[in-house]
Image 1 (cartoon, one colour):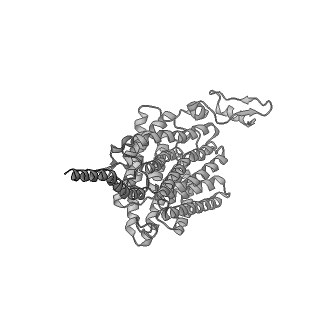
Image 2 (cartoon, rainbow, N blue to C red):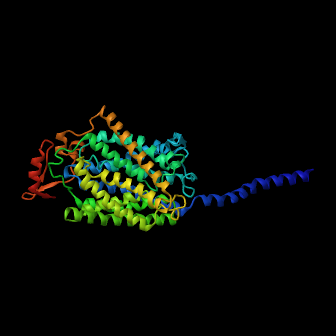
Image 3 (tube, one colour):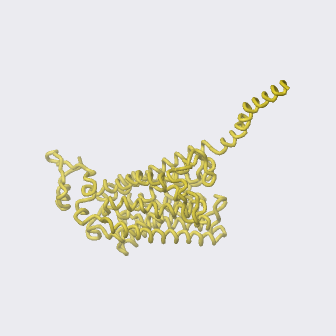
Length: 471
């Protein structure tokens, strides 16, 4: 009996020692297969590229406004990085990608990133940590409301801007992101294709920008005063950063370092290049001169248009999408806006609203399962139904942006002043909203600084500025 107990005890001891090791050895390869270091690295770098797009947008927009509003315009984009990043972590991500509620919005199961950790979430990306997917998508949530600021530049008060941005991200961006990208979202279930944000990012931001521009009215002096960009080199630097970051925006949406990412990278670049060429040529014919502002605007138009299609189309369709985007968006900016007379300050609607709409429709024309088996064929590949599906996605995005933006602005207007006063517009938002100025002027005769008081009229400032040089 003693020997039996000894043998039994030894067996138990061996089980205690070796069985966990056996199971661990069996599980380790499976765990390693879930997390792919190459995919994780690629997605994190792509998230960083998308992040730099928002400061790039700040420069892009900042250079196009007048000197007195440069810092206020840059501040809006830069502040959004902080504001929406916090919102995304607290509840935005859960609303957009959390467990589905009636195909409409995500539940708050992941509030405060509860349950979002280092392990993958197979519903969205099986080879990268859930946190990596979350932060990548978070950068999309950041830049989308920043795009809207171009429509109301130089005339919205900062407190109203902050409240609007928070409400819009929560009530518009997060639900629409769930519809299109969230598991169970109704547009995703319908079959709408949006690889990186044509409906989710560009249509809803551009259309919302138009609604705000119409609701708060034109800038003081719009149509009677020349409102030229104050620093085009800054705008070109911003456009270059956007082009650079867009590779993360689109190629990163493959969520892995793979062939689909390479395809999206290539289509992104050539569409932007084609739109740059077509915008400049169209402008040259229409106005008689090609401009660097046109080239910068054209590249962004091409990037916008290819975004929903980047992972579904081959290179030649990407060229066609880009060429058409440059022409369509130029006409929207130079012809339609001028005839209708609305003041979309920096053409957020003309480039993002119209460009995003064209891109979403073009996806329904040129998408091919030979590029991405997870997608669908478009009209030109024998599937007319996909074009209809894309049009439904476009219509839903337009309607949601119009209705919700109108309601949000109306509600905010009940509690605070949305638009700067005429006097504040004359003085500039840099001083009236933030108490600072982007440029220090120096008298070229004495070398002493020239300071403009808050009470100094715009006319006086202009006269003094003509007699001074930049420090």
